[in-house]
Image: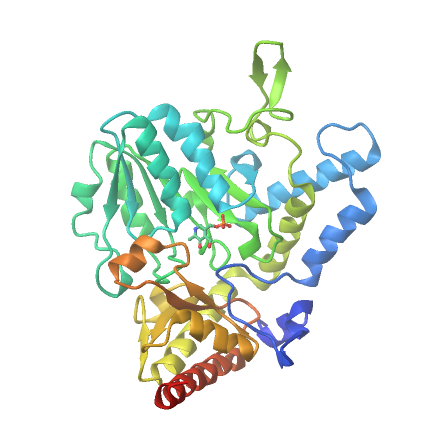
Length: 414
Ligand SMILES: Cc1ncc(COP(=O)(O)O)c(C=O)c1O
């Protein structure tokens, strides 16, 4: 039985008070909270078998290596990757995308090649490609965003064409909430022989993921948005593409043999994990994956559709509310961005915070899309496995209170 009220009991932070009020945490798209099981996996590593991996002959190192590699296998199983070698541990989604930019794109792209993105990309899946374009002479092309935050794919066959070498798109927008038509875009990328990358930062934590079905060449995501600690992320690479990547960072662990003037590379995936990796956090990511597997990703998604549908219903009661993105919960991830009349999103966030309600205000690292909508900023509430209807009720009342407060201060000129 999936019961957010029971699930909450595993998250110590959700018991805390903020300014004397119970915490209502609705900033999950930025980072999720961590269950006791994940925190214990971290302390267990440091208290019982803290040691470096892949190097030692002693018991602690063997144990740490086993647990680190076990975590890799758990992540592979979680996204149905055909082999654990396809899982490269990075710091986060940003580093995973940069790895592809440096290790594949800089080496393989030439003037007049094209990289296709969407207009709704997080800066993580935009700024690295700007660098690649500047350094190689390749061009950036964009699938436009149309009505209600949906991609306008009417010109897809023109945008993705014989010059396209890479298509890299976000599967679920962290701003509009839109679930993008990944398969349609992938099919077009395949027709022209382009590589296909997915920024899964907002989809992998929230819905079942199958990289074989998705048939992507690269999938990037962050542990900290899926109950794991900060500092650990993942790049999945399709086995047939792995060998085409140059090493990203260079140094220890990623080499096989070193001479004074050159070196040869270790097996994959160690080749892409230079230096001492983030051992504790990778092992704790394994614990987070166990936790999500026990909940069942179908149930996680179902709960999020219910939460989003309820949030849309409650927020629509507010006349001044302008909800951004798709109109129905099924077409969205578990987040809702909005503007509230003339009240600045930062003021909305600050007033909610005074009631213990944590949301996000700003551009959410999606400045170009805000610019297209002629917005400087927006507010965003985002949900996860432990959020209840009561959390959403608190949000709705907090927003009404914020509107009253600003209406009063406008009248009094305060
Ligand atoms: C869609 C999307 N892509 C990329 C990122 C970057 O993730 P990280 O900061 O963990 O690298 C985020 C984070 O908010 C995101 O939502």
